Length: 502
Image 1 (spheres, rainbow, N blue to C red):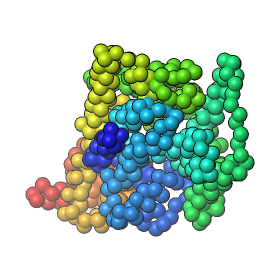
Image 2: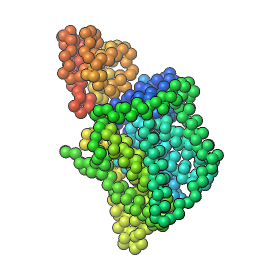
Image 3: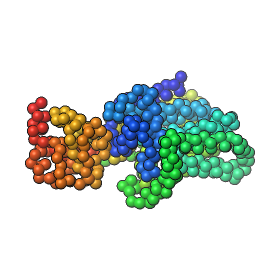
Image 4: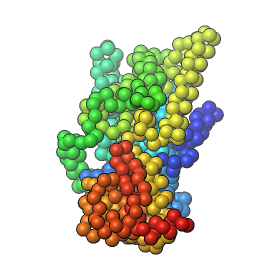
């Protein structure tokens, strides 16, 4: 019952009002790629951009199951439903580790997964990261279950998880490397503490099955369901391309402390204080307890040591790479969340007196309440504010006001056939292509064209428009696209007068 209530709590924080936040650039770019799949059945893996195919294909699958409308009427909320459900599934899968973490630790980890502000926020964000974290958990849980049961089905599920990880995002290699590193560190620990490592027999048939399923998933997704053979080579070539990009200059280059500042101590000027420090403290307790021969939490020490190594190595990988975006923290954050569940269980077991158990219960209850309050604040009232640690290059709500005005003006002109010109420096107009997708005649320019014959013009603030546009149009509004980036709306005089007089 407690676990079901936790699942319900995860759903309550993830599913309502998914359209509240304006589309982020990355969401809009992904959405246009999904549109080609949804409308025309076309998808080609691009080794340079957009990451893997699971996001559009899973979204299409959910769309087919729920009789979704055509792309023109597809909503942001419907797109985000896929990642929101993945966030709920992240809680649902945790009982697969019940004989490794222990029942109490699974409940704790489920609660912290449901309430973590970062995990909740990015469940409501239509990008690949939430799916990658989900498939990573599936792989770890299936491998653990195989280790315990040695069954064919868990071997196959491990291969399925690995294949889905690869088909989701190129950074899956960091998670795989961290997992292999954690296994090696566990072996070293056993060897140098005098504990005899157990025999690790890997039946060739089970390994072959796991690898075969992995390759099948790779074949299906990267060939776009057997329609584009070149996707297989692209799925390998992408790593050379991303490596070159990672070495170059990027606006996403940040110091090593970038993720930890957002997770544990974020206090921007003029904004509230944010912290998921409780998870760090409990995660350290869980890891420390797991290095005992008989953890008080009831967890299996080899699983706790694996999760500790995996979390540290994955966090280290993302820390040393200059290119950083906040959602990349989710991979090692979820490892920390599972350790925090074990830490909470250990504290509960250590506290044998009534008074100390009451104190632990109050401490954990207060901490969980604080996490839930931060998760709600980050995902609802402050979902697009710069003082939210998880808001990054976010589109301003101003853009929704711009679109409301554009739609109202266009309705008085030729509706979807209204000609709209968009002129933005260096092509910085995203996510406008998503919001203007229902218009048939939209021109896009990175520089001011000689001829800008459109009754509605959206232009970067301060651009010198042609003289005929200045004379024939009125500057009808000034809107923020993102922090420091502004757009102007210009409307033909006669059309604007009709709009004002309507």
